[in-house]
Image 1 (cartoon, rainbow, N blue to C red):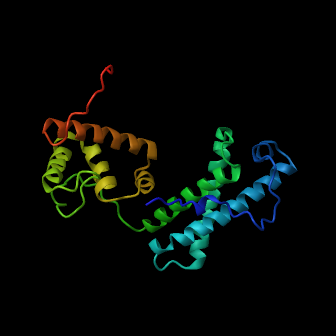
Image 2: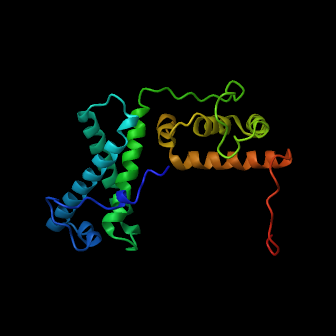
Length: 222
């Protein structure tokens, strides 16, 4: 289920204590009083958005009080603010600036909630799939018992130890990728590449074993 609904993409701007600039990009780019006001207005909007999203996700933070939720929202707002400013040159004006910026607040809130939910949970990097007969298989391969068994075999035989541990953590144990990246001292892109390479190896192994069909190449392609 997507974390971003249609209602989420409508920024809560009503009642902002700082006026909204007519041109956000220009206002945020040029040092001076206008930039200061734009920064304050943007941060206020980010904080409102993050508070809203954190409240929506509070079911995954059982027992967390309002004070801690406010800290999580503030952390998310600060990170979202930095993300918007970093990506500012990439804004192409295809949507309202506030709608574009608001997405950063929604996604960063989800990241902060996941990080907090996992703060005291140990992440085990285990490469033994056979002790997890009850665990769900990688997405798309778990419906048939025979195919699930073939996937476990492919994980054991086709992947490197590093690929096996990362694949099990992300696809079987459902460790959030940002949490795993933080625990391993790496970044999301490195983990995405590891999973991509692992999927490529798994696909090739399953094709060779007859559990997946060979991809059809259209005429004229090489």
